[in-house]
Image 1 (cartoon, rainbow, N blue to C red):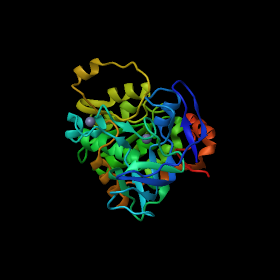
Image 2 (cartoon, protein in one colour):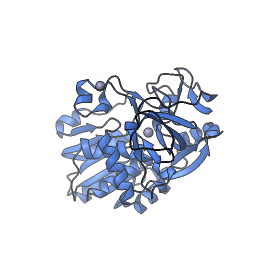
Image 3 (cartoon, rainbow, N blue to C red):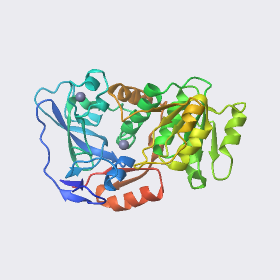
Image 4 (cartoon, rainbow, N blue to C red):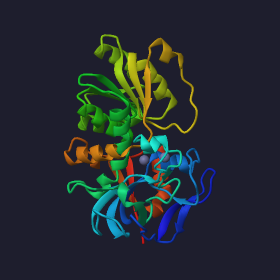
Length: 343
Ligand SMILES: [Zn+2]
Ligand SMILES: [Zn+2]
């Protein structure tokens, strides 16, 4: 089968390769992939800014149907519509695993970076990672369960957002637009900040429930947030752009004793004024990937229509068009690109 593979460490080294179809072992299932989202992480792996163990098939945002169940699998059968969590393996016995934080297990092997991922036709995963997709969620929308679970982990497990808080979401990419919807469901007044190039993304943010949007290179975000908060600043800021300018702006926009949540990955060290953490007693929060409960909540929110992922999919293309997809990602044209396998 054809797969999009990182062949060795170093910048680039990504190509389409023929690889062996997997077989389901004990307590494992093989998923026939129907949709695999392209994510910033894949892009960072391409540039070697994120750890990987090549040769490895990229892709960790997957939806499909169960093609095969291995011995001992209970609760799933061929034909079931599913999505999957991303840890192929965790040790199960370190303090993080035992404490319900498998995302922080040092032995964690994730699909799409440390072990073969979903940008291909068949994906092997442990049955314990698999979740049924609600009937109302199609494969493309379902492939966004993973980024939604990550956003939910960062915002609902690691931070504390309350009704009537003023919350800034900086960066209206796919992650920011998911964050905007989750924040809105917490009952917060939600302000999404972008730049002039983000105009259509900011429009979509409004359609998805943002109370207000700001074009940072044309308006003064501080003036607007100060106006909304009697000069105090935002209760919570969610940095979703993974960009230095946005990070600095968020540190400025957050109120004294407010919360700063870092969701965007930057891929390299950045400069910012760390003294602000002291002067304003800011709580800095971050959530790495997701935990099983984030997936249950993500799927429930999608099923109930509290978060819409389908409007974020701007392009669907075969994995063989990956170069065009990476180019579109770099240019930030469109929003979420979803790959389909080829024979
Ligand atoms: Zn991702
Ligand atoms: Zn562990």
